[in-house]
Structure formats: structure tokens, C-alpha cells
Image (cartoon, rainbow, N blue to C red):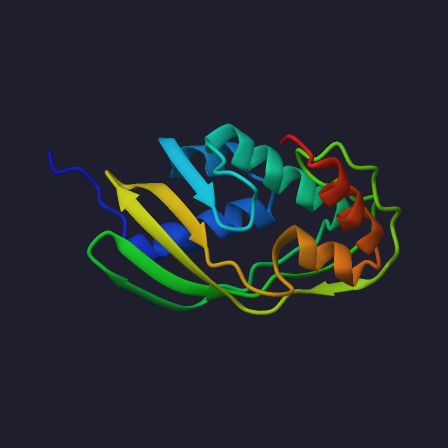
Length: 161
């Protein structure tokens, strides 16, 4: 019997759809056991920490959308762009930081377009890398929420994630 192989670009779209609909079991099934997420976090996150990170983002910004576009793939490598957009309707706790939460503000969060790269292995996502960029990631979210004081606190305390 032939093993079902999913188009790598569809696998990435399915990952984001699962995150956006908070189907955490589906997210888990699309990630390799040794999955690594890197680029906009202080150190690479494994599969479980990545899911916890995404859940924390969605708690503070429940309608957060990735807006995946310009998807190109060759073999098992997928390059694409994402633009995170959502409204900060609930208190936002910066994942893995120990920082105080940012009270709900009702502000629109719209990060600049980010370049992302995925590596697929055996039908699952093994790596998800986000190219770092000014105004992006958690830092960009905090800046847009006027919570820059937390960034200063983080730098002074050298938070151990």
C-alpha cells in the first residue's frame, strides 16, 4: 500500500489553519517529534514549547491570523511570507518570560511581513525558522501595545527563558 504524501505547501497551510482554529492536536500531529522553531524567540523551541507559545499568543490575541502568502517549495524546503494581524482583546502574557502580563487594550497588532522557512521530513514539519526583522516577533507586539517598558525590564534582568 502506498503511503499518503501531502504537498509540503499544503502541510504548512494546514499547520496555520490548525493554530488559528486552536486545534492543538492537529498542530501536534503536523510537527515532527524533534521539531524546532527559531528566529523570533531567544532559543529554539521544541514541539511542546512551540504549541505552548502559540497558545499563549492566542490567549492575548485570540483572532491572530498568520496571512500566509508567497509560498514556494522545492523538495522538502518551503519558503513563504507571513503577516501576523490581530486585536489585543485579552491580557497578554509573554510566553516563557516571567514578565508581567499586558492588560487587554483593544489595539490592533499588525506586524511587518516576515520571511519564514520550513523543512519537511517524512510528511511532518521538522523546522520552522522565522527570519528576524525590526518590529517583528514578541518585541514588535510589545512595541505596538506600548509595553516597551517590559523590554527594558527584560534587558536589565537578562531573563532566563
